[in-house]
Length: 340
Image (cartoon, rainbow, N blue to C red):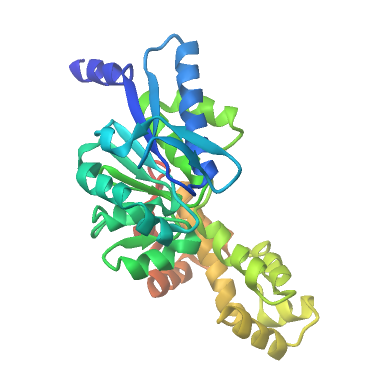
């Protein structure tokens, strides 16, 4: 009973949140979380519940802070006066390497105060600030998939997960690109005030409380569509829509009116992999999304991703990720209690 009363008390507390921005911050990574926190406070009040969020906007210097768009925010608190609120959200920037050089006070604040806040969240490329401050040493972290290699190269001691929507490593949270900041903030609301309030906010914003799939649903397919040779994006889309079918190299080539040799040469030149290796990668990405965000049995996951058997999927995962599908789910899943 005492434990239940303690939980109820914590869920009635108001929480202090600081959103840290700086010139060139990504607009949606600030306004998205601000909307989530504002809606949550409104729903708590409408339900007659105590609690809610007291939000301040902080910056290296107080005042008018321009973003990467026409929108700006007014920072009411300078970092030197911020202290250590309950929760901190650090927005990312497109030109993050330049921001690291231009904002040494933000790196210093992270180094001096990051360990003192209950939750310190870096949004998208904001993870570079925590990394520069040494707070992600030997920890798992997320960032936008397009910046993952840069984060790995600059900070070799960090376990960078290019698939995760967001990652928690103790008090430190990191998220994927832009809209993933909303996913992470919804997770905070659920943690603070329960699933019902978080779900109500998600409905207000017409989005999933926990979106299906990780960044992997965007990586191979989206990268291929954006940067691959003309016409190969259509081939990737066609393949992705038929992963549960036993596609052969000859069928793929014939469907797109190409010879096997021409298709293979085009894929190797455009993507650095053969058509069948690319197909296997697409299937792995589909399987990972199902493992992380559903409780489906492994045999069902294998079937939906296009593997002939769950044993074939297991061998492929071992070869590609040095983990079995069961181990991958146990390590990374966020969807509750996966089925055995």
